[in-house]
Length: 161
Image (cartoon, helix red, strand yellow):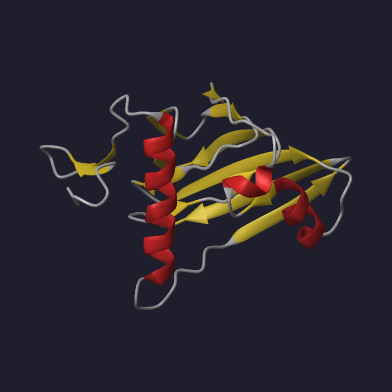
C-alpha cells in the first residue's frame, strides 16, 4: 500500500484492490484527484489509450480500450451517463464506494462523479451520454470538466447498477 494513496492496495494474492473503506466522501474525492495529479506528473511515457467515438440520434458513445494493469482517473462528469463493461475486468471507485465489474456489467453514473479505475485484464469500458452535439470537442465541453468547482451547483449522488 502506498501511504499517500490508501485507496490503492493489494490483497493477499497480490491483486490490486481499490479500497473505499466507508471513508468520508470528501476524503475519497480528494484522494482520487490527488491520484490523478500524481499520474499526470509521473516521469516517463504517457499511455495513450484507443478511444472509439460513436454518434447516433442524440447519443454519444465513448469506448475506451484500457490495457491490463492500467490505473486511470476519468474526468468529472457534468451529465448522467450509462456505463458498460464490453469486455474485461475492472475495479472502479468513486466517492461513494468501490466495486469490481466484468464484461456484461451495465450501470449508470450521476453528474458529478469522478471515477478511479484499475484494469485487471484488457478492458473496454463504455460511457453513453445524451447530447445534441456532433463534434468530439463540443461533446467534451458539455459532458466533462477537470475540477469540481467547474460543476457549479451540481452535486454528485452516486453510482447505481
